[in-house]
Length: 334
Image (cartoon, rainbow, N blue to C red):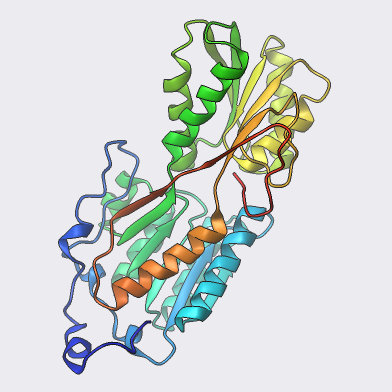
């Protein structure tokens, strides 16, 4: 449990303690991850963590996506269990709004900030604000742009999220299994180029699908992680490329939109799961994250950090594969 097991000596030391060497070097070889705060002021444990019910600030992009509804529940449930006073702010998918919300929460001197950024690049400014306030930052789901963090001289303690490259690869392997290792595949992507995790998913799929010399990615559109936008841009993509026979939807909302846009067409949609959407002949497989579990795990990591323990710089969680006629439950989303 948080705080209660500390000795007086440990409590005295928290003002100068930094994360152990296990935090060093977040780059996992993908070039897409964010640097940590090892050895910096940002890794000092705030005195607020020793309060009776430490304040935990949580910043999420929206609650229109079932993904974030589930994650919010995980933060609140595990936070209560750990003895935190949890505040969740929801930005309405607005970078400036998220920055303003975090600035307000930082004034309340949180033990830590759990940040699921709206966008990878603008969120570097949020991390810099937290660093200036001496508040450690734990990022979840959306990896932050490494160049933007460097420009801001901003650092995080940890990133926790899906193994996105593996998810893209897993999906491509299922496409090859279902449709054939040498089938003529004309592939369209419904993506989000401003989100680092989505770009990593796309790359994982692209690398794995190369095992089929007859597979070609012919178009990529930006679904903006919204069902309506994904429906519109998928429809436009199909009009311009009527020979597309496979769509890789990089997010759950992209899958929703692509399924609707291709209804009645001879097109297979694969990708990250749309929550509670049944798998069918035209939507044969998807991979899913568990955002409620991510929220819980981030809280657990903050507890470990606040109690002086070593936390990993990066935690990548496996994805679950669903196949027709399965239906991903509400906790399994893309």
